[in-house]
Amino acid sequence: MTLSVILNILIVVIGVIIHMIGFGYLFFNRSIRISPGGHVSLDFIGKYSGLMIGLWILGTIIMAIGGVILVNAVIY
Picture: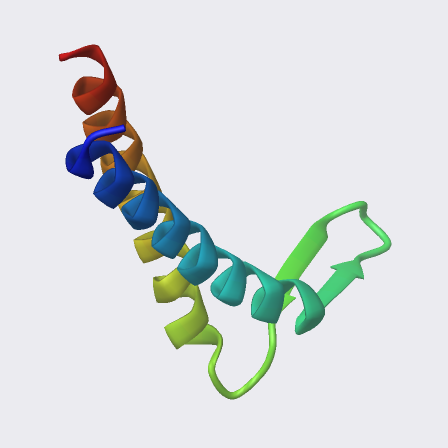
């Protein structure tokens, strides 16, 4: 494996860790309400919900970019 492949795997791993921190916080701090009319509402509760949504999205973007670069590094 070249250094480029190793660094890109590291980028993907960092993205996964950031993604799972955000997702884990949101998963355990959620409120699901179902109204009598059948409307389902999902609310993220907790002090850091906004930050964790940002981390979840940022981790997903880092994973996607790292994965694309990794595929290019392996092919070429």
